[in-house]
Every structure is written in C-alpha cells, then in structure tokens.
Length: 510
View (tube, rainbow, N blue to C red):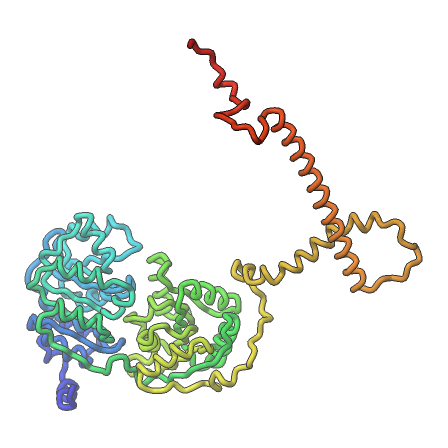
C-alpha cells in the first residue's frame, strides 16, 4: 500500500465507506468512528459486490471488514427455509461464536435471522433455526457438511461467501471441505477471503474460487506488532524444568501481569500444565479442542471478565479471539509452525496497548526458533542468557511417572530382578548347609553375595537335572507305548497301521 493511499485512508470515517444508516448507527453506538486499514480497504469494494482478498495480521479488525458490508447488503430480501442467503466459514467454534456476537452487536437495528452451526451443540436446535430461514449462516466446515448430508440444508441460494482465517483452515486440514463447499454454492456468488498469511496452497485456492479479486494487504504477512516486547527464555528439555521456568517467569512478572495466555503445542500438555499450576496455587484455567463447547465458552467468558488470571491453551485460542486486553503471552512450547508464533503473541499488544511475550526454548527447539526468526525478519532477544549457558548435563533427579517411565527403566532393572530371584532360590540351599562350622568368621558382603549366587546356580542346575530325568522317564514310557502298537521301523505302514480308531471299526457286508 502506498503512503498516499495510507494517508487518504487515515482521514476516512465509517460514514465515508458507503454503509447504511442502520449499520452506521450501530457502529457509532459501539464507540467506533475511524475504520482500521483493512476495513477502509475492504468495505467499499465489498459493498460494490466485488470479490475481496484481504491479507492482514491478527487483531486488525478483519471481522468487521465483512460483517458491516454484509449487514448493509442484507437489508433487502428475506431468507427461505433451509436456504441461507450468506455463509461464513470459520476454522474453530470460538471464532464462529465470536462472529455471531459481532452480528448481534452491529446488526441490532436489523431483524435478521442467524444460525450458528458448530460441533458440541445439539443438531435439533440448529435444524430448527435452519427451518425458520437463516439470513446469516455461520459455520465450521465439518458441521456444515453434516447438515447438508442429512438433507437439512440447501446452499443454492447463497449470495455471499466468506472464508475467514484461511491459513488456519489449511493447518487444520479443512481445505478439501472448503473446495467441496465452494462447488455447492452458485458460481455467481460474491466471495470475501481473509487470511493472515498466504502460503502456496492458499494462493492456489484463491485462484480457483475468486473471480478478479481486489487484493487488500495492509501489513507485511507474518509481521509482529511493534507494541509487543518479545523475549526468549532458556530451559532444560524435561517437562518439569520447563514448568519451573514458567512459574519463575510468572512470579517475576507479577507486578505487570494483569492476565496471560499460556500456549502449548498439544492438548495433553495443556492438561498437564494446568494441573501443575493449580497444584502450585496459581489462578489458572484451560482451553483446548477436546473440551465440551459449553465449558470452552464458559472458560473464555471467565477469562475475558477477569475471573481467571492465567489461561492455558492450545492453538485453538491463537487465532482471532476477541480478548482485547491481554498483558502477557507465554509460549510454553515453541510452535512447530512459524506462522503460529505470530498469531500467538498477537493476543497481546492489541489496539495500541503494550504487551509482553516470553517463549521458553530448549536445545531441541533451535530449528523451529530459527524458522520463526526468519519469518518475522528479526532476531528475538534472550531474557537471561542463551542456550549456551545451560549446564552440560541436565538433571535426571525428578521422579518418573506413568507407563513411559516404567518402560524406560524396565531393562535397567532387569538385572536387579534376576539377582533378587537368585536370592529367593538360594534360601533352600542355605538351610541345608548344616555342616558349616559354628564358629566360622563372618563373611564379607561380597563373599556372601558370591556364595548366594553360586548356591542359586547349584539349586537351579539340580532342578533342571530333575526335570530332565522326569522328561526322560516320560519319553521312555511313551516309546514303550509306541513299540506295543507300531510295527518295526523297517516295515512299511499302510493307512493307520495297527492304530485304527474304534469308530472306524464298523462291520460291513462284502
């Protein structure tokens, strides 16, 4: 975007964008007068019915970029049963619910029916809203296709399609679903496409489903906000080392820490870290994809309202969630995908506020860290010395728990179990040695252990010999039995020989 264009857009107000009076009234009531760059660039083209490709980092107001023009366009006409007029696709339930909240806030002067199709909610309630007719349908791809396959939804009347957080859709494997949905919608639709980054797969998708789109890019893709202080913190690679480092960071930042989101790479780590923080008496909650939808929404509401200080989350919370005043972000794990780093730390430092982010780094994270620094185009400063200052040998004193720990020490303890088994087998032999002198000098520990091992070996050999002799006797009895019923080895045996089963000895007439 050129500087002249930027200056011109900075002078714009929402009244200059062509929005309807009803929408402008709702925007003013919400306390907004000046649009963000992505809003100023996208809204006029969307109102003209053009396809729009919007690229902007998280927290720049992308949601209003499509909600406001859609409300203006939907003022004419009504939806029919099971045939929504507009469709908005979101990668997560939280983002979908947040978009619905935006429609409720900015569409308060409109009588539009909305339907939210997300997982974790009853099909019946969603079907009732579809039967009533939905002017605005907000959905995640999986649940949308579920309703379509059940015959409860027709997409032939969709006038406007919005694909939001497209790069997140790619990460979550939704691109095949998106391609299928796009083919079910009329070719004459208007498409609004928003993404924070533009990897090759997303570029290919836009070329396939957008028609002469207007490209609106207001910031460098994958850039981080200048209002965020970023730091790296070294740690040992063991989970308990990282948890201790995190606790120290939280305590050190306590004076400035209003609230914080702590990101983990996996749902299992979210649960483990949450339990650890609660054990150490921190005010924490958890948010990940396996939680019930009601529990997730309640947890988010409590965090927004200040009832929770710390929120441990997977990347389900990294994109687009409207939590405007987060003071800190802690990356408990370095993200595997470099783009996720931008979205995670973008939860703080929003709307001109200052924020801090701390990323805990182990020696195994160097490759992912290098990818992040390459993506954002700048090195990240270390908080208290880099990885070279770590001890050469990491502590192994922490207790091991769980099945993995048992597997790890199984072989190590095998020899010890064999020795203990030898001691138990040696006891009968020791009891039989009554001929030893009563006044013999006490043996040393090494001599006693050696004698015990020898006695155990003797006892085991004796037992093996007895078993062998018993097996030999059984073999002899078996051979005698065979000799009585079989012919000599040099004689040719026909059929069963002499060992004909009794059930086959049936008299017949010849």
